[in-house]
Image (cartoon, rainbow over all chains, first blue to last red; front, side, top):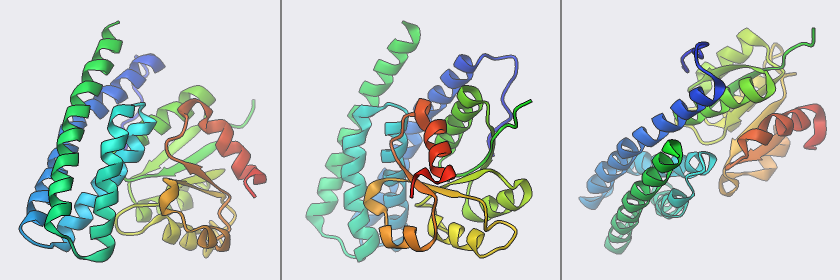
Length: 123
Length: 127
């Protein structure tokens, strides 16, 4: 459940807080995907496929709503790969390698977005 | 005094819940109850009888289709308009129609325009 809005803060301050929490949570989302992908690299695992796909898919939609445009393309690539595993129950080595590549692009995008967003917040 | 619009928002992403809640409360002055999954969302709709239920389609456990099906199958909640929040790729248009969904908001959405869009859809503008 969301916490009750703090009435001592302005809407802009509350919104800035929500954006900051989103940025701070990105590392956790990346780690969730990395851990699921490492499990998948050892062999098909339905639970890992489910976690990987849902995390990537959710990030794709949420990032765009938070104007984190840098994250959308790599998150979409991860979600697309994840959907095939989620639906199909099969994976091949090349797809796993590609997913690790998409994940590294996401990490770089998170860095760029965080720098931009924090720069905007200061400015 | 004008009646405030009440919304139940069901989404498993905590950041998105906070963003939508704040946006609707501060830009539109709506009352927003949030739920993190389908079961919690159904309970919230029963308890609050909102003017609209905004339901994420892709959630673990009970997905948005099932939430909508259960709401429409319960006389207590059948009249509450349901709007889906979704990425277009996952949308099953036939099922959306069959379930009598009021409308669909595609992610990403413009937070500032969300209240207007929900109002339009829940008043029949999405049909």
